[in-house]
Image 1 (tube, one colour):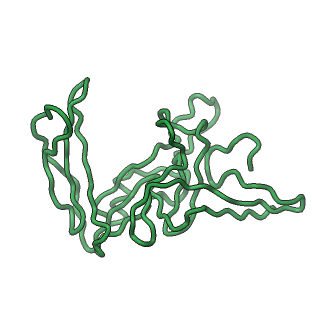
Image 2: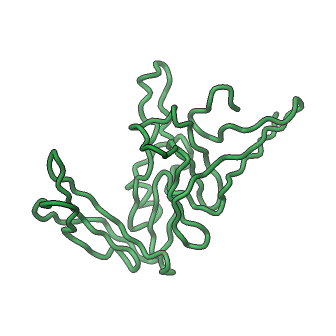
Image 3: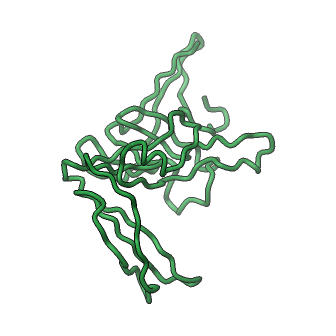
Length: 209
């Protein structure tokens, strides 16, 4: 059996590539909000309330060409010792679980879907969708998976200048980051050393290991 030795370049980052939890200790709450009149122009906050110490939920509305869009914003104080942020994920990389269920099982006050997932493979007859996220995942310092190649991701087109490796993360120092995670690894076998092109991801570049 070849021995695989993967590592990520930024292991200090707790990646928020799939879903993120916000869990002030000792508090739980459901996210609810009321909606006011549609916004005339620009984002307008229609309601704000505390979820728990260090966590706040706001609802906003913004006028668009096709009507009014309503959104929710969770703001957390990462300097508050009662607040923790981490990755919500099912037991297996290819498993599926609603964000609400993962949030509840983690006893968190909020969960955010923060990636696109391989949920439809109709363009590849006979290939089953895995349910896995496109981007990399690290939970509690442990690398779970790397990012699929840009051309093989599921979801709408990427914004210019972005890649599937781009992440939102919180480091062990409690600071939030926008960064890019690159997989560096080597496969060791009796035939020599070979670069590792993927880790637990649903697509790998042609010719990659």
